Image 1 (cartoon, rainbow, N blue to C red):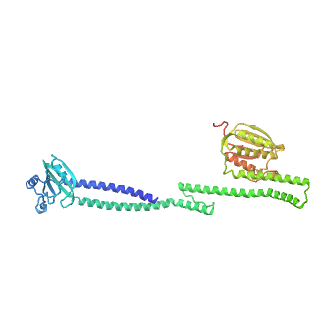
Image 2: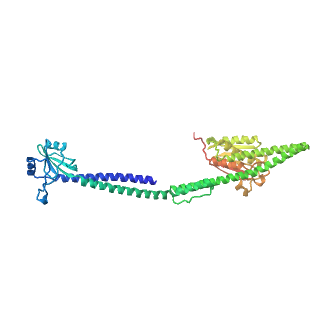
Image 3: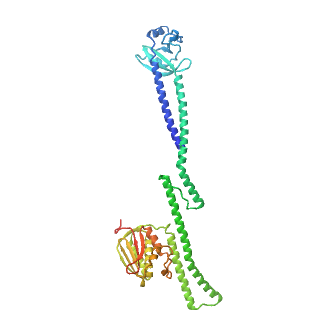
Length: 446
């Protein structure tokens, strides 16, 4: 930023300096030209010079020495190139002079020429008669000296301006980028220590403040995600310990009976194998639910527009194959979501309701985007309702029943991914009712 500011100022100052130099040069040249126009020697002096033509300068003196007032570097140039010097300095004849001498009447031309000694001068050649031109000149030393001084002054001003601009740019850049520096240090600290509790102070409401606020929000979200991940791992480890311990105990018992030659009673052995199979089934269900929850935030299936009543009908048919008695009353409703995750969520609600309902009787209704799944069981204590969608939470009444405690958590996750809401409450007349509200339409968009 400092380099860019200094470069921009340098370019601006350079353009201004060049423009100023050209303007001053033009004005000084104009004044010098006007001064040359003011030189008008008497006609008698020009006639005398023509009659007594001399190629060399003469010492005419000056007004203070009693000489003529027109004593200036001047001369007459004839059409053949002959010069008749009138002043005290001779001017080199050029083709311009001969051209003006033959151009009659009243033609003149300014040009840069030289004295005989090589001094650069500004020359004015004016036609004064047929075949004669009056040539006057003045040195360019003063004009060139002024322009050189101007160049030095402009160069000094430009250098000072660039230095001041560079200093100001450095100050501004450091001030402006200081919050970015703090943000960089915070990111480096997090990368080095993995400490997601780092926060950046937010000052003002500019872009840097918004960036700092977004960074803080990101680290907060990452902290929450890490905490949920750690909690999931801890809960999963706790829940896996029970079926694994039971399996290990039963398998150890079977192995010991084989190794010691003491066979188990056939009935006891059968019950033991059935128990092992049930534990394997419970373990498989738990692992499947854990995978479903674990990939919920990273492995979303493509969301498409679908007929939600068809999804509910398919879930009800699967539940009936498992022994549930499902009564459905479904109206069309089109939503945008993942068909597999929504079907899994509805199936979990039906399975959960059938588990607590006598004879597995469940009523499923879909009206205007509101899905209700009702059982006719004992209901849920009011103090347990806030916890029903938590992972691994199971009410005291359900701890003896099969399940992983993750079914309703999977429902909440699938509904949230679709932009809907889910709640569980006690139904009038007994039993519990799950209510799912999904955004959608009565007719498809396409």
